[in-house]
Amino acid sequence: MVALGPLAVSFAVFVAGFAVVLASWWLGGRPRSPAQTAPERVPFGGGADPRVHAWNRYHVRYYSMALIFLAFDMEMVFMYPWAVVFVREGLIAMVEMGMFITILLLGVLYAWRERALEWA
Amino acid sequence: MGLTALLARVATGAPVPVFAVAGPGTRSLIRDLRLRPEIRLVDTPRPASVLLVGGLVPAEMEMAVARVHDAMAHPRATVLWSAGAAGLGRPEGFDDAIPVDGDPVAACVAAYRDILVGRRGSEPPILPDVDPAPWRGVGPYGQGGSGMTGGVPYGRPMAELGPDPDGLRLDVLPVAVGPLFPRFPAGLVVDARLAGDLVLEVEVANLLANATAAAPSPEADPFLRALGERVAIADLELARARAHLRSVAEALLAAGLEALALRALRIAANLRAGDGALVRRLATIISATQVLRWSLRGVGAVPPEAVAGLGAGPVARASGLREDLRLEDPAYRDLGFAPLVDAGGDAAARLRLRLGEAVQSLDLAARAGARAATATGRVETPRGRLEAESSASERLFTVLPSLLREHEWGDVVATIVSLDLDLEEGPLARGRARPEAAA
Image (cartoon, rainbow over all chains, first blue to last red; front, side, top):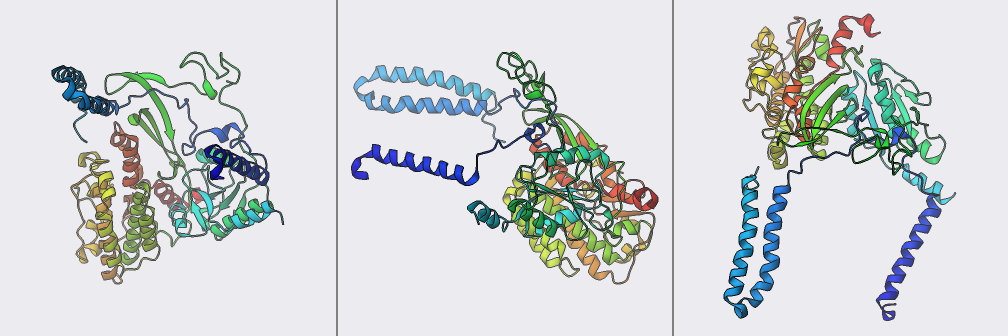
């Protein structure tokens, strides 16, 4: 099997998966819709009936944490290739990295002002 | 035998997933069913196969029971349990339900086996199959509306805009939870207006307020008897320790610590006056459980002035108030009783205090001998001062919204659990005072 190459192995996995689906179909009968009537589809609220739809727009409070993550993540993404060429490029690379870090620092300062660094 | 039938037969050996509804008078009986290995009490109706309804469900809650019934997946069955004298109610539409007087667990197991092997058909829905508003095919995509927030998608309107504590204008979602939410006492409906998970405004309703109820058995609740007669202190204090341990078990369940909760319930079920060491060991484990400490510290703060004079029992004592009817009883004074007080005022303090009081009660029960409490028409129950016309939980109800407002939903649930509200105490006391009303 392995000698036939990765494609044959994938095909075998696909066929086996399909066989399992067919077998469970045959064993359990046709899959039924999990909810059949309107009261069955209602989310559980302890017996209370929801008055409004659950879609709603709310304040994503972790946005400031996401901001800090992005700032440091981007820094790293740029710094690795930068470190490789730093010796060859010299001062220009230094200045470019300085500009880049300054821009990211603004994001961190903003997150600081939004109290993202105050734990609990 | 076909393969399907064989698998169904194997499945009948599994613990029965049961969603339990505790009608007035059956609260602790239903909670103790968690100790039975044959069944598994589940928190939502979706995974349940059997709906167990204990006692007489008041008319105000019948609709909720019907909704829970219809939310169960097929195949399903309902068991109506009379729980002794609590009474057998047959809510409207439950014509196929199985009535039982004795052991509800055996009835649940039998019903589960019957619906799995096909000896008994799955119960049809009770409520009509209609959406709250017509929406299919309405709007450009048939989703029931137009634009982002217009119309009635899936039959319900969208949440409306409202101010948010951060100065934004975002959706305020009205959500009612209860009266059969497993973490809340049966009958409690919390109607919250949510901004994300923050509760902006909250109203509470007690659907058991006008219920008439009879205790499952007169011996079941010594506190109810103590309203009108002299009851042995040993009985009262043993019942108090038991109630506190059950309340601790509820708090542990709400924190997701099921094994510890079962341990507390097991101690409560077999409690004797000499079990102080067992309870103390449980208290040590609980106080060393860091998850619980983190999740309860500072949660559900109750300022003493909010509950002063309400006779709120452990809730008041955990907020530093020295309120206890037992202080006025010469029989208790004779035993050298002094109430435990904790100044913490939060959910962690209430948990600590209940465990401490359980140990204290066991000690009192062991030393009480034949002493009986003085009957004054009022009694200090595990929830606080119970009178013939009102219970501590009913009086706490008036300050409940102020304790829940502007907290996150998870903390709201933890707060309600830590208050250990018992909405059936009032109806039971009134039913005792006016037996003809309960009949």
